[in-house]
Each structure stands twice: as C-alpha cells, then as structure tokens.
Length: 227
Image 1 (cartoon, rainbow, N blue to C red):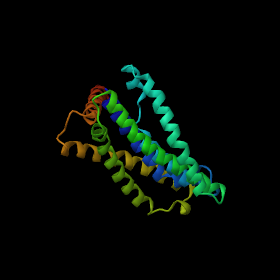
Image 2: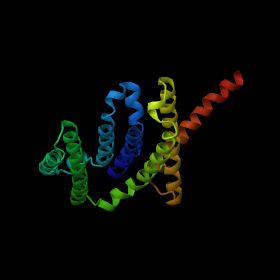
Image 3: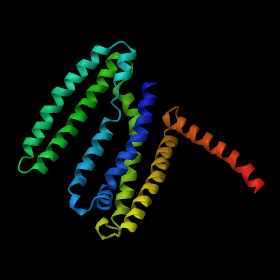
Image 4: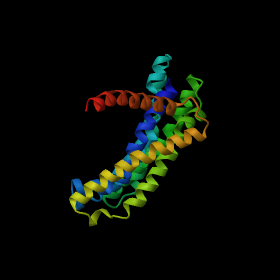
C-alpha cells in the first residue's frame, strides 16, 4: 500500500512540478510582468525541491506500525540537517538579499536530498521496503519528466517569452501544457511496456483510464444515435 500510494503521488507531482519549472518564465511575465523575472529561479528551485520531497511520506507507515517515536526522531534529524545547510547556503550567498535567498533555497534542496535518503532507510528499518523499492516507483516518472522537460524546453526556445504578446503568451502556455500532458504519459507507458507491464501503479492508472474511456463511450453512443 505504501509503495502504491507513494508511486501515485510521484506520478502526479512530478509532471506538475516539472511543467511549472519549465514554464516559470512565461507564467511570471504573463501574470506579474518583467519586473518579477528574478522570481523565476526561485520558482524553479521550489519545483525541483517539491519533486525531491514527493516520495517522503513516512507518517502513515510509522503510525500504522506503532513506530510513532520514529517520527520524533525523523523530525529532529531533519531539523539538525536542514537548518545548518540552509544557513550555510545563505552565508555562501551573502552579498545581496537575492543571492542569500537563492543560497538558502539551495541549502533546503540539499537537505531534502539527504533527508529523503535517510527517510528511505528509516522506512526500511520498520518495514521490508528497501531503498531499491523506492527507486522502483520513481525511476519511470523521473525519466518521463526529464524527457518532457527536454521537449518543452526545446520548443519554448522557439518563441522566447519576452517577445510575445499576452494572447500569444497564453497560447504558448496552453500549448506547452497540452504537449506535456501528452508526452509524459506516452513516455511513462512506453517505459512500463519495456519493463514487462508489471503489476505497478502505471497498470492501475491505465486500468482507470480504460474504464473512464469505456464509460464515456457508453454515454456517447446513445446520444449519437438519438442525434
């Protein structure tokens, strides 16, 4: 249950966060103007950190297995790792408020990586789930979003955001979002097929989509006959 729930969270969170990172400049220019362009790297760092943290939901497992004390140890350890890294990043970025903020966010990203690995090890200490099991539900969506980001980034460069009118910017964002919604599941499905169509989260999602499509067709056919 843990593997399936975390796999589902990653399947959903990864493409949303990655898409936000790719389209950050277009969104900022359209929504709040070019004066806020320095916010683009901040949005991208936040999106990447969200991807790193997506598979770190320890709480339900610890409570279900009566290991709530581990949650306290986890939080204490996360605190002792996070703040030294954040403060170190802020110190290294000293010079102006913007670079200090960037440094702090890079420190937070580093802490998310370290705590993520330690959380996987902690899960392994109270369940049979190993670090390799975590990798098993992460690698396919990770490759899928990297492919999606490469495609969207390449196409985005064909129409630089600062040169677009507001209407063109909206059309560009919608086009990129639609293309991402097409590329990501196609790559994910291809990887699932190449991997032998195992009993994974992708199989459940494919089954859900198949059921939705079947029900939609059942509703559409009578309407078409009446028309």
